[in-house]
Each structure stands twice: as C-alpha cells, then as structure tokens.
Length: 250
Image (cartoon, rainbow, N blue to C red; front, side, top):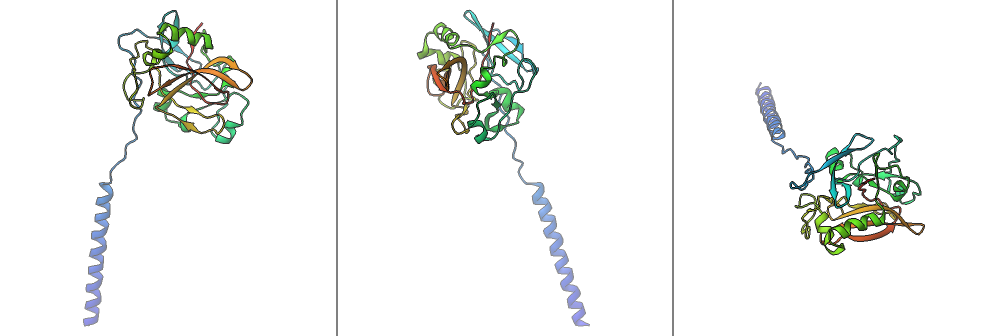
C-alpha cells in the first residue's frame, strides 16, 4: 500500500511540474518580441517647388519637375510594361542577367516590397532603354546631350549633383555631400546591378541613370550621383548593367 501511495505522490508531483512548465512556456511565448518590418520612408521632395504628375502604363503616378527648359520625372521609373502594354522580361537569376542580350528589368535584390519599389523604382538594362518603349506617352529617356543640358543649367558637373540629390539621410548614406535638392530632381540612390556578374550593389550610395546614347557595341552613357560627392559624373558602362531611369518630357 505504501508503494502505491508513493507512486501516486510521484505522479502528482510530475503532473504539477509539467503543468507549471507548460504555463511558463505559454507566458514566455506571449512575451516574445515582435520584430517589425522597417518601412522604407517616402521620398523627400523640395517643399518650395511646384511639382506636376505623369502616369505610366501600369498606373504608377510620378511627380514631375521643370528645370530650366526641361521637364523631368522626379521619381525613378518603376513600370513593368512597355508603353504599348506588353510585359518587360523580369530577370532574377544573376547568371541569366549577366548573359542577357535582350531587354529586361529587375528590382534591387529582387524585392517584391511595394514600399521599396515605390521609392527606388526598378533597374533596367540598356537593351530595355533601346526599345524606345519604356517611357509614358509624351515622354522619352534623355540622351547624353539632354543630360548635359541639365548639368550645365545647374552650374556644371562639379556642383550639379548636390542640387539634384534628395536632401536628408533617409535614403542616402552619410554624408550625402552637398545635397540641397534645389532643382527638385530628387535623385534617389537605387544602386545598380552589375552586368558582368549580375549582383546588386551600392543601394543608398549611388544613383545611376541611363541615357539613350550608346558608346560602341557594348557600352552606353549615363549619369551618376554619389553619397560622397556633390558632382554629377558622366558614366559609360556595360549595356548589361541594371540602372535607374528618369524620363524627360517631349
């Protein structure tokens, strides 16, 4: 009989222990910290200027700004269709990207987050630029000469970049040298995708914009903005690169 009582006692003790431990786990589970998804802040436009708008084939609405004799999109293109309604080829594989000789686009690190894409836009290779069908109706991608017109109006390459960059460190990495955005262009550091390896680099450090002007059979011209410079450099690089696009009004 004593043995039976001892067995019952041990079972009760074990049951209480398991119950308490289960309650503790449930309590701990309820107190686990929730790691939030950090929302990408919206772009900071120049509040002292008046912006217009333009809408692409996907229904995306972009701010526009008149600078001198030109009117530019003040946001990076994020269209997934040509202006005739056909879908642009989307490439996620690094190997496929570097071997392309046809038009394509991607998002940085292949993100699908709407908040990120709405700020940084998409990245396009130059073959997509060369189709002549990326821009909204009544707009086009600027030539090398049209970029130069903008740079000259803003005082030349040594100082134009600062006047073109979004102010603050919400998207640009420190120090965002000389950024004033006095032009209203609101340049955003969407980074790039290397054409020779297909990897993504320089988000928050560089803005790389295509022109329609080719240089030889494998390279094309564009413009570059940097977080460590107030200049806007002319850049010629591989047509396989994934760069941002700003459109200019016809």
